[in-house]
Amino acid sequence: MYVQHLSVADFRNWPRADLSFEPGVSVLVGPNGEGKTNLLEAVGYLATLGSHRVATDAPLIRAGAERAVVQAAVVSSGRQLVLEVEITAGRTNRAKLNRSPVPRPRDILGGLRTVLFSPEDLAIVRGDPAERRRFLDDVLVQLTPRLAGVRADYERVLKQRAALLKTAGAARRAGGAGDLRTLEVWDGHLASSGAQLLAARLELVAALRPHVSQAYAELAPSSGQLAIGYVSSVPVAAGNDTGVIPSLETLSASLLEELSRVRPQELDRGVSLVGPHRDDLELRLNELPLRGYASHGEGWSAALALRLACYELLSADGAEPVLILDDVFAELDVARRDQLAGIASKAEQVLISAAVPGDVPPALTGAHYAIAHGEISRGS
Ligand SMILES: Nc1ncnc2c1ncn2[C@@H]1O[C@H](COP(=O)(O)OP(=O)(O)O)[C@@H](O)[C@H]1O
Ligand SMILES: [Mg+2]
Image 1: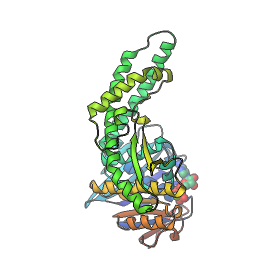
Image 2: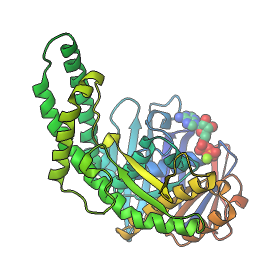
Image 3: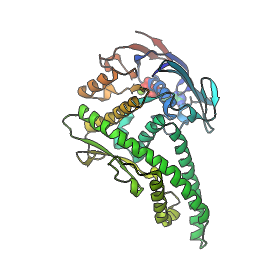
Image 4: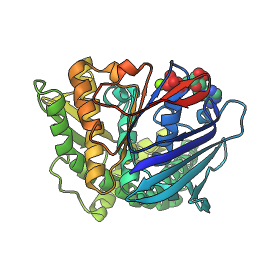
């Protein structure tokens, strides 16, 4: 698939911007701080309904504006689809598909698939577990848009449980019994949406595993084996490297069992202590955890391998995703640059940002867009 047209209004530093793209390579070139990444971020937003740089929507709205609008025309298997999201601070966002409003923004998911590489990717390797959960979930919602609904349900359950745990905990500390009956109902909700999310993550990790190992071996042939695993707070899902995914019933039963085991601690702390929101993607290089052990170069190779694995997986699943390379070449050594360029040169569409044209490997020839002083001018 490819993005044929992008237009944004009041998104980040752009009051308005319009760009037409063709399949193949497009490079946004311009000095730092001009808004290149912002444009690529807008494309990524339509694919995941999230930014690769910030966890909330507020920074995406241009300072002083009330709402941002991002719209793209996407061509997939010869058919055009127009996706649009209106991002409003503190209120529910709205979305349109082919210019008609849809009930929820997540109804546009699946219309555009992207795999975005950026300097922030090192955080997948070095950052907190939340970074790796987000990495997994961003791929999941692109592969299976329905899961965005499951994830939203799950997040609602966590909020509700936290409120109930706090009240029940306080009641118990005051010598009362606390309303445990209502809590049990929400345990059930947590177990059912949690099990779906868990099963999907386990399947994803199993599907990514061979791609990750292979991509890493190609990127860093002398550095050893990169292996991934899913670390779970739910016993039946933990250490699951076999590729055999427990059934939803088994996962849900195991979740419920753990919840009742940790009930006293949950009441003390007022948070849910078991479930996919506590899990992690484990990265091991030659049996050592990457986090804390890996060199800078190994960390980068691992981050690239993870993204490339997503690219392979999404491509194998149907529509080939748009490859977005945000200012990554300057970060990489020559060998890794060439590897990435080799893969990118075969992609249906690659959107690249770079401070100077010389940052982009020569294998990636294509259209150039000069970006300066809030203006975009198309070169060749
Ligand atoms: N919500 C916002 N409102 C106005 N300007 C913003 C907003 N968010 C980011 N910016 C501005 O965007 C610029 C950075 O754009 P970016 O796309 O990261 O640049 P680059 O071209 O280096 O990739 C900064 O000048 C920053 O102040
Ligand atoms: Mg940038």
